[in-house]
Image (cartoon, rainbow, N blue to C red; front, side, top):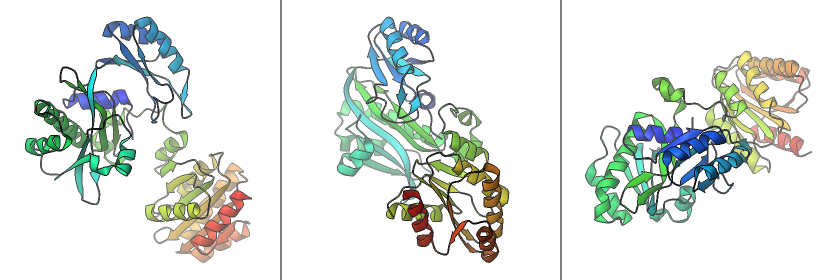
Length: 377
């Protein structure tokens, strides 16, 4: 679950990360009122759960309340990467002397949290990590230990920060790390962390991605889920207890097991097509859950073919076949489907599908090949 910028800043502020003064607006009139409250130049920022707002014209500086109202009206009428803008954040403009990137995430290879920082704030950190990884300072933190002052100070030296900025940088980094731990996040980042002309550090922009599996421990954070911004198919899948991510390709995928799902997607890509989704129905899925998963896949109008790849360990292949037939009958969809069933009761399942005219395959490569051929033809 990803938080909106204004929500992420609120979470960071609770742990002591300094943020600009600002308020959320849903109408141009509200934006004007908030600009009057700030009593100075403001930046009006589209609140959408995608990147690229600035390039799309969704971040604009306004020098007066009247201009803030006009800017907000324009932004609220636009779409960013297809998503409508329903609200804007109106906050004070922070004069920047320099900019940093500071973030915390999980290094799964090291099995530790990692705090990252770069003196090149404001740029896309993924691109920087790919092209100039040496410009990113990293600090691994043991789960049972706090982030110590001296370790952050070493990071500040590595970044080339002047000594007068060390104390403030330590405070901000430790506050960010506390927010990361306290919210069970998978990613917390501030980019850019602005160092003002007065030496004050302020989180000009921020991003928080929460671990869905830990939301039961944070009802307050769970209530921040913005259903207006959430992908409709992903929302439906979550309500059905399915692990689903909408990707946007042309071959719908229904698989049991995350590793098998990733392998299935890789083979589709290797054969020259693109998966429409990641969908893991889990082990032991019965016919009703299979039917729910297939209904969600078929609701995606971009899907030209469906590839169902099931390994029947706990899951019974005949149960899967029953769910597939039930869903196709109910929806009346005419999207071609290729099914590969291997494991428990696979013969029974394959016979059921063959009798209904569903295309079957014995191997993943055969199934993916047929699905790609159908999607392209």
